[in-house]
Amino acid sequence: QTAGVYVVLVGLMAYSAWGRIRRVWQLQAQGDSTAANTLMSFRAAAACIAIALVGLVIWWRYARGSPTLALAEFGIYIFLQAIIMARATSQAGTPMTEGSFTPLDVVGYFTSRSRLGATNLVLFAFSDNIFSRDLRGMVLTGFLDGQKLADGVGLVRRKLLSVLVGVIIFAIIVGGVLHIWLPYRHGAVTMYYFPYASNSVQFWHQSEPFLTATEKYNPGKLISVASGMALCALLGLMRRHYLWWPLHPLGAALSISWILCVFWFPMLIAWLIKSVITRYGGIKLYLKLRPAFLGLIFGEYFMAVLWTVISWVFGTNVPMFPWP
Image 1 (cartoon, helix red, strand yellow):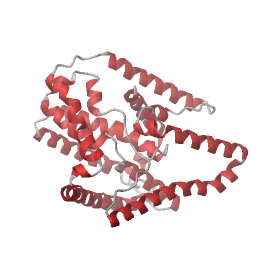
Image 2 (cartoon, helix red, strand yellow):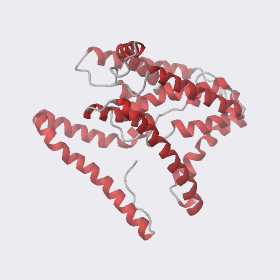
Image 3 (cartoon, one colour):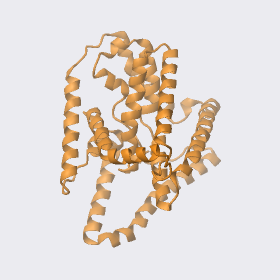
Image 4 (tube, helix red, strand yellow):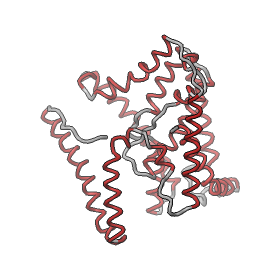
């Protein structure tokens, strides 16, 4: 159902943005690259996506996988999951990005996963783990937030491109070195269990039954997808035509994600407090009290960093702080 919501939600976003996309394309086609104020030209962005997809397909094919399944894996991630998960943070303010399905799940809606073969299942396990499972953050979210901040201070978005690319390269180098050095120095089994003993083997365990037994295809899954699409279409239609409608289709996309399973109650409390403040105190009281609530968030992050530094200096275990 959630996958169906994602599909329609991306369609609604494309429909709402189509007017701007067309205007920007016309401006850039006429040679006016600055008036549109985009991070890069649409042609350059399309070329980068094409190069990335070709490279991924070549890698997948070089590993003896199916090019068609490579396009399915990365197409579903890039054009479906990444867009919605990034929007969940940039627009809805969720503290992390996570989907409730993987590209392999979507492929399984149309065929038996046992028919994909061991090689493709291995490649799906690698790719699903890296791209679409339990991300604490993703590159696209940073791109969206950075452009929003640039608009707020009057900075031309095009000037951010070199900075963002440089930061990505820096993060890859630092992250790659640390994730090799730390486990070999301290032992991965002694470190935080999730990246080294849980998430890293999750998809291998999930794919094992498809290698050892024949999975019967269940066409009823498509009915669930269709019901999710219908639900999202209804929510989008109501929100578009009725100002009083309170339910957002993005909420349906996130409804069974891990982030809401864990944080739904704090979010409910925050919403109740904000509703009371804005209803009885108005926007002036809301703006006056907002720094206090931001202080609670920054204070918790500061204490987590502080105790981490103390524990590092004295070689003790870090106290447990709430997720994520």
